[in-house]
Amino acid sequence: HVPLSRRYVLCEVVSEDPRCRQCIEDRTLGLAVRDAITRVHGEYGLACCSISFTVKYLNAYTGTVLLRCRKDSYRLLCSALPFVRYLESRAQRYPCFLNTLHVGGTIRTCQKFLIQYNRTQLLRLLQNCTNEEERQCIQKSLLSCSLTEQQSQSGDEEEDDGTE
Image 1 (cartoon, one colour):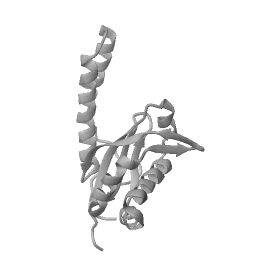
Image 2 (cartoon, helix red, strand yellow):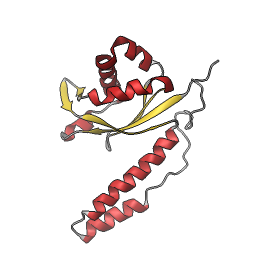
Image 3 (spheres, helix red, strand yellow):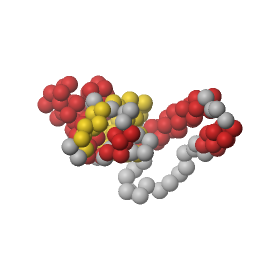
Image 4 (tube, helix red, strand yellow):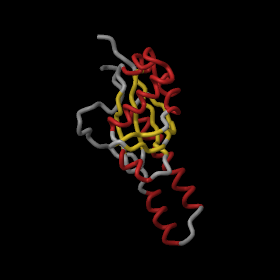
């Protein structure tokens, strides 16, 4: 049994169409990423990336996506992500793109990065507040940004233990 190292790629789905986030599903996103890999790197690239590739986390509300792949193929995956131009659901195409935020060795490092990223975004919003009610709401959100220990419900290890 040879341990496999993995990489976790944290992305956000960016779209001007509000319906796009409603259609995001693990399967839809996985197919769009695989299609982009095939277009950019061909069947060989797809084969390399498909080993251990999965959508580990998806939050349709925030558009946050966490992809997992093998360490030796994460560059192929990352180089294909800008070529995801739309998500397709129920015979509808929604234009969008994936913005890569962070690449980490564990889910936990990606979570920590996301908390810092969200804090930064909230601080930007705070600077652009137009009234006191908005300001108080954003300050409350800023204070609630933290990483709490929770038991994994699916039984997956949170850290990359090197096994597959």
